[in-house]
Image 1 (cartoon, rainbow, N blue to C red):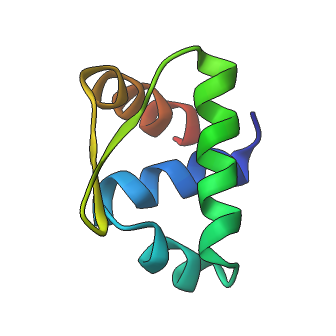
Image 2: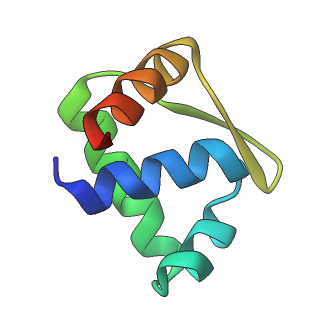
Image 3: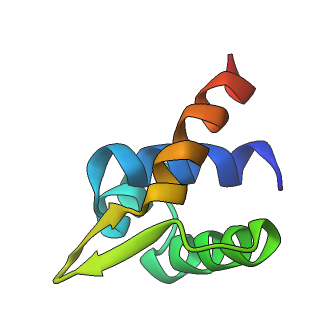
Length: 73
């Protein structure tokens, strides 16, 4: 887990859309999806549930969101 992955996760949680995050970070949407999948694998749990074109945090995702914010501060 690195700072860029945590930043991507936080932005995804706030915007609920990987495409928007990709635009803000100047990367492709598949790159964001891959980062999130690798983070989920590393943490051993799902962070998001896909709802149409958007994503919403799981219960574990909400917990990790608070932890990730404190990591960056």
